[in-house]
Picture 1 (cartoon, helix red, strand yellow):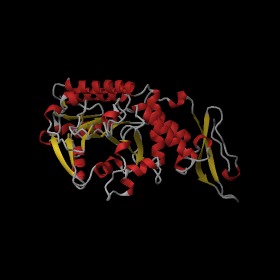
Picture 2 (cartoon, rainbow, N blue to C red):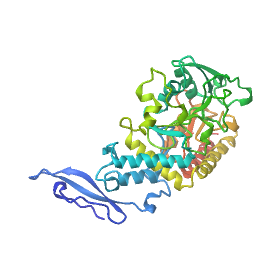
Picture 3 (cartoon, rainbow, N blue to C red):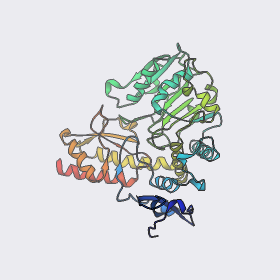
Length: 420
């Protein structure tokens, strides 16, 4: 449809017709008696074909950032189509009251879809919170133990180490194993761990974003009443997980399931209601559970985006199918590294290599800057490793298409051929 102008104050509200949404975009202000703004009208089809992104658009890059990270193209397009007027409500999601029926329907569907994806039992609460996963480093001990209680931390990377240090303010944590001396390249055998039989919980980081170390199985706390707690920020919803093995799971959304600003907590309900007296109200899980994540104004638009991602993952066939795609992508990239005859190297033990975050170095470190520069010219960005580690890191979350990994591998082989 050709662009047309109209005077907004006198124009009828344009509703979607058939399979088309109409967007009003201000293009200039013109002098007239009503000082009205001119608008141009653009149509965006909302059919399934329109929303399904079969290949990377020419104006989009392959974004290998560790987080905030790439989001599914069809999810972004759906959010775009609903941005101005969500489902005929006359409002954007960003304008809705979190107490209103429209937003309640959004958050309730997001929770229901997440429960379906992970088969979350009814005796677990699902909370949509703020403050990122880092806030949970304090919230977990504040909710699960008393100041003098013992807790265990299994540290396989920087995030597990940060969680341990924060817990020292609120309880008596002990690092039962740390991979720091080996530069975090492996997960230990669970049989040899010196677990405290009195520990209230055992904390792990299921996938260490910086070092690319991922648990493929999970330890069991020795304390009969102890619980397993996992930070799953960077592999959340990347594969099926037996939630019943955990007392608590938390995850920042900005890697696999949405934009930054949302943290999801899945907690067994019998663990609620025992927060320490010093616990701030905003860190008390029971308060959020009792209020269905609506105690105060939540990150409404972020939760809406997470809901669209959950819906998309279900349409893909659930997390079993998602895991297959992730295994294929990771396999292609790791094979390219391993078959490069040392030009590229991944330091992580093969048995625990992450499907989400692939760190690698170049044999000739002086080529790293050129590698990054040339990759960016080819529209592949955010490949630089974390500032504390260096080298390269390709984060290949759910939303990274196979084409992105294939393009990266082709580039790596070509770069090697030029510089080996």
